[in-house]
Image (cartoon, rainbow, N blue to C red; front, side, top):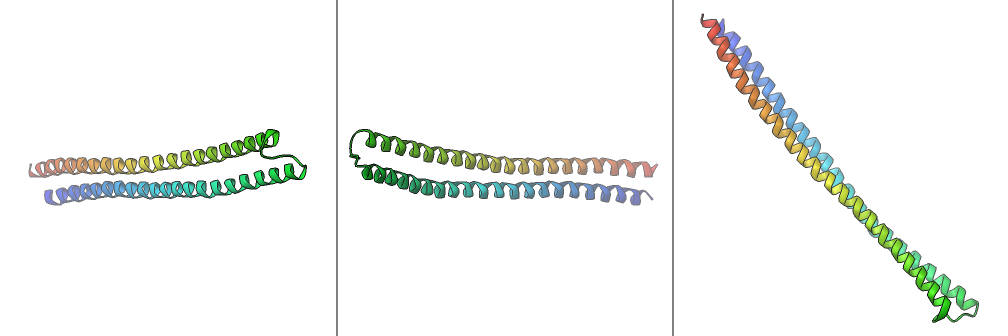
Length: 154
């Protein structure tokens, strides 16, 4: 009779330890998946920044060309004085807008990369904790099994 009780305790403990280990592995896989999503989103932000920069650069060039044409149409000399200063100021402001947009997208991408790193770390730590918990279950089960066996011998 004591062998059956010991077997039940051991099998129960083994199943618990296995499920703890598997839960940790599932959490790690989920974290790695989430990290990959964040990494992909970061790459998309970087690509978006490049495309937006190109679009903004073309828009800046069109604006300056329109200003130049407007000044020339009005008979102004565009290579000196107020027209030149206005075009230079507009070009500078447009360039600052481009740089701010690039900085914002870079910050978004960096944040997503940091999130990915954190996700991987959390998954690794969760799996480690589950393995430690499973090892504790194995040791506890061994103690319960020995107690059950000894109680059955009496």
